[in-house]
Image 1 (tube, rainbow, N blue to C red):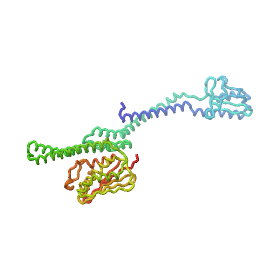
Image 2: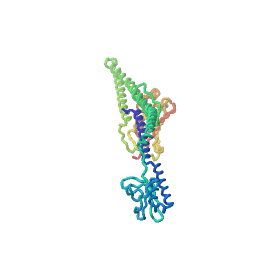
Image 3: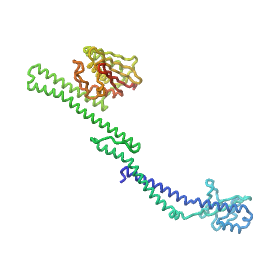
Image 4: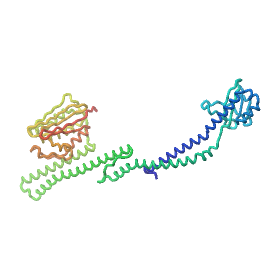
Amino acid sequence: MFTSLRSRLWLSYALVVTVSLTIVALVLLIFLIRNPVLSRQTQQQLRTVIDTITASPRGFLSDPAELQRLAETHEVRILVFNTARQLLTDTGAEEGPLPFPRRNLLNRTSQTAVDAKGKVWLYSLARLGDGRVLVVAAPRPRVPVLNVFADEFLSPIIQGGLIALLLSLILAFALSRWVADPLQKVIIAASQYPSDQSKPVEPSGPHEVQTLTHAFNSMLARLQSTQRSQRDFVANVSHEMKTPLTSIQGFAQAILDNTAATPEARKRAAQIIYDESARMHRMSLDLLELARLEAGTADLDMALVDVGTVLHAVVEKFAPQAHNAGVELVVDVAEDLPAIFADGDRLAQVLTNLVDNALKFSPAPGRATLSAKKAGNEIELSVADTGIGVARDALPRLFDRFYQVDPSRARGETARRGTGLGLAIVKEIIQAHGGKIGVRSQVGSGTTFTIHLPLKNN
């Protein structure tokens, strides 16, 4: 019971209204108990008696009978104290002794005194010319508060409380629908996932609920994108594995059934089996490395790295291949280039992949330029070639797994088929370093890969 948000809102509003009405009733009850209206009337009566006596003090104070008559007429008690605060006259001595009252400085309009029996008196006093003190007191007025409260106020409070409670429940129902219905839509959408019916939820309700809905829609979009990527990944792996497996199986069968009867045919079949198995091995290693990079579990040996040294080492590594391909490798490193905090081997792996692609798609005579410079708080690396370029519609997919530019457009002897994972691994390595990589290209004019790595001193 009261486990849903809607029922709890209803209960909360009912409690708020009940507490509010209770507070109002208590305040009204306290007001009636203190009865400030009757107290002010009594105080005014006391002041009238004092003014009457002080207007003719000799006539009243010298005649006890006249003083008693005045006290009975106004239903008050008249006391006179000397300068030592000793009682001289008391028209209500039978009520019990009343001490010399002390003035309440914090509440001058409601002066009270308590007699020996605990009875509370309201009083007003005045100093006479001979130093005596005149005190006029009257019992603090009391009314049958509970009877008045029950007769006059209880019924309206109950009626108003029931009306307020009914209105609050109606308002609570409307507000709970406003708050809970969008949340219920999110719950339904979450319970239906994953399915083809999973769709974004239309934001509505309070700002916080709309923020939650936007976050849920964003999460749903990311999950759906991940699912699509997983499906594409499985399909791509299956497709990429199918071709070499078919070749291996076919040529192995040719050897087994003596279709490849000549030594040359058997050697060619064995070579194809070896090449295709080697490509599958590279693909397996690349997939494993890519999975580790995407999961953030790849080991990065971070240290201060001289970028210029890495660039020259990569160029030296590719010098024979570049010479055979008729492509000139150029290194352009800015002076006083600061070292960066990175994994030198991983950085060399990135540049190796980019230079390898530059040589693969650059016809002779060509040029590939490796440059490095400082750009603000970053180091900017670039690998630019004068190759055949990449079509504009292919650029957004260039870093996707298994995506490959048409190998028939590469130079003949270097048009070896890769795994299609190289640039995806490059992107993950750069992102693991907190950097970013971009590419711009124009068909027939070459391609430039640009890497931005943050400068760090620790």
